[in-house]
Figure 1 (cartoon, helix red, strand yellow):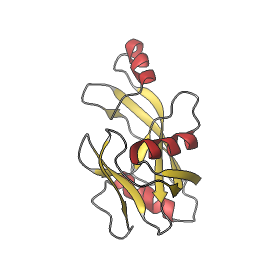
Figure 2 (cartoon, helix red, strand yellow):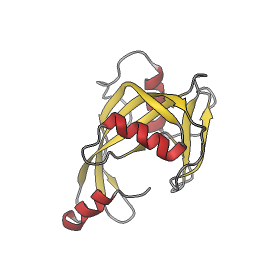
Figure 3 (cartoon, one colour):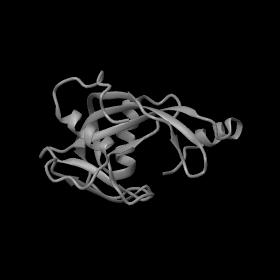
Figure 4 (cartoon, helix red, strand yellow):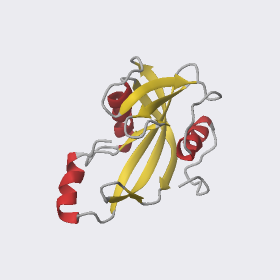
Length: 159
């Protein structure tokens, strides 16, 4: 995925050391209860939609922006689903990041799902009982977004 310019600037002085960063995940449902997914261009796997807020950007605004940038779908954020510190990730170039993920349940309000940037190979709507192969990160967040029970305090989910 594309590295934001502000991260490149940080890396000029921080080197490859761990950066603690905010991240957002958007679980988007349409009026038929289907969930929006993208097949990532970096690994070819289906995934939930997400990204990194720009400095000063509100997390919910970032979620809606990322959905549009990646899928051309307009959405509104309905609620926070989960807030979770993730395990550190070491990228192929040696950079290390750790994310505080804020997951939002979103509702589609316009646009037609299509690839809208170079981060996805495909985007599509899926019935929740007919999802493509997804990692536990995505499955856990979809399940949490479908529930009316609060999960923001849940520390038992996958990291």
